[in-house]
Length: 539
Ligand code: TEU
Ligand code: CA
Image (tube, rainbow, N blue to C red):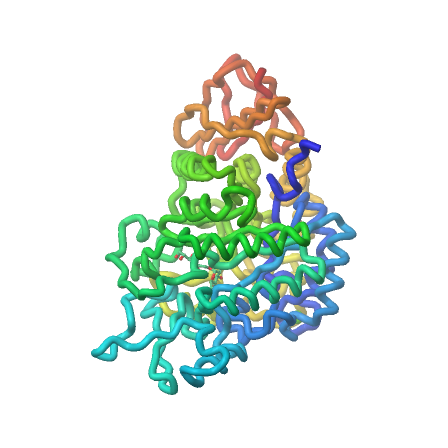
């Protein structure tokens, strides 16, 4: 049909279940709470949802430590609640992607309980076990993303096991064929329940270097990435083991084979200081992951030049293999972009221009819950911090709680319609005036801009799958050209807090309906207000 596949250019709304909506008054968001608001998400104009983990878990990493891949943790509800969520989403025309955390399990998973008991036995090689060095120290100098050595000692085996994250998140050994077979079956369980695909957690950590070679010293580039987590001075986590080696690719091909049997899609999370070649390798050729996202627009650095470079580097890397990217400016792991890049502004024009820019980049994109409201990073009092990663590095790094506080549905003090009891993380009182029910009737709100823009965007073929180029523009102006045979679109964004001028490259026909105030060029001179935007049709 020539129409791009639904996922190419799709807007994916990321839900963090714990903080979306509580329906059983335990202060924690749950699956029925998501189902209740699916019409709100469909109304936003998203094509799909990505639901962060809701599986059985001791919640040491709030669900990214799975102890049963085939069940819903009681705090979120039941499998029946999940089926109801999928059926409702499909009735509303929303696709459902769920997280798959395959790189590691919880230490409470039965597999690990068995594996750690002895060096022999059916699952003794399901995790990464290694002997101590002669002096008793860990097998290598690998570091955990969450700080400290990536190796933990098990006295019963007199061996170390690998954990790239918390000690309670032992790494599965993908070099063991039975592990790959089993994980594919865990994913099939959800495909059978009708999910449309997966967000694959930490997919660049699936394999490790079987020779346990030491890391070279951390490089500058990585320290740039660790600005995503300024508290992590440890440099590279695991060996510069080539994450694109044949065994990595072979597993992703097996995974794709499973997905293709159900017409499902995948978006891989690639957190790595050299993510580009990995993302390109993992999405090239149409027989591995469909999409991948990196951390390029999730760091603290912000400028039109930075955005341009990130996208062009990405395109260059992807071009070779025809892969496809997925952009995001916020998620459950980093400071909310309105604060991270906003320099303290509370002007709704800022989150609006970022939203429009995100939807104009070539690729698909993820919108993190609350981004459509322009929510800023919440300040969580130290005695309410629960993210182990933030507690470890406080005060250098405040942790991830500030981007995970409950969504305000109403301005009602103190819980904003999220719950009737004190939630697991405090409702940020400064978020209440930005509640959904406050923004819903306001035509100038970020929420209504999001609705208008995403609806308009879906009518622009060039924005879904067109090529991308960046005409020259003076900082802080970002010009983006998107082109398909039928449409040549020029977008111009002022990413700064002062008015800006831009010399249009050619006579363009101003387009309306996108949500920005009309900006009529004076001849070739386009004048944009602070954080303003413009779309024109080029001849
Ligand atoms: O995050 C993965 C992650 O933190 C790394 O990709 C890191 O960003 C990179 O190495 C740069 O430092 C995923 C989940 O999003 C996160 O919430 C979990 O805590 C983590 O995996 C473990 O499952
Ligand atoms: Ca609940």
